[in-house]
Length: 215
Ligand code: AP5
Ligand code: MG
Image (cartoon, rainbow, N blue to C red):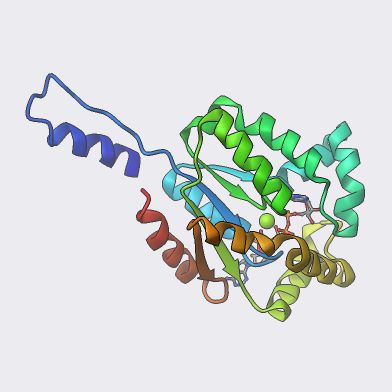
């Protein structure tokens, strides 16, 4: 894998074999995009390939709901309506999560941040723990395509937010509350755009080309 390749490259390039220089490149990525665009699908593939921790705030919140925790019952009412869970809750949750040891070796944030407030909060968290975002990948696709993907998945997913009204509302929420992040990250030269329509493998190859520039 890329970590071992990196380590080996340094061993071989070292004239004195008593001195082995080992360094590992830590990558922290963000996937942005409207509901159904394939953030989770692509995040799974990328995290397997680069050995990154996959942090999906949607998955974390659904786990909290299934465990009937305090944060889960608070979040449920927002998720069921297709609304965003308040920034303060998300920032507290992600501050705890990113301070854990397994976040030291690189991660992919899937579905976080989703508001400018969350992005600013994330910047502060990362400054405190001395982490850095390498790249923000934005996936986009036509709304009708996304609605049809989510309706199809809703037949079997059991997710409480996959009725037609809520799916449409989630799309609106993306454009109203999350899309300002596109400018936010473009202004600091982190944004890379990828077309979210097409074969899953082709989209994955596009993302790999981008990620390889950082790995
Ligand atoms: P979350 O779970 O993050 O849902 P989402 O982003 O709204 O949408 P999905 O996760 O369903 O879509 P996805 O882009 O991951 O696509 P996927 O790969 O699954 O959030 C749920 C809720 O939690 C939010 O509404 C909010 O309430 C709360 N929440 C979460 N994070 C929050 C935050 N930061 N702040 C506040 N609240 C937060 O693919 C979808 C389907 O399409 C699948 O069936 C897949 O197989 C298929 N598919 C994927 N790629 C393709 C392709 N290329 N072609 C055809 N089909 C494809
Ligand atoms: Mg997802």
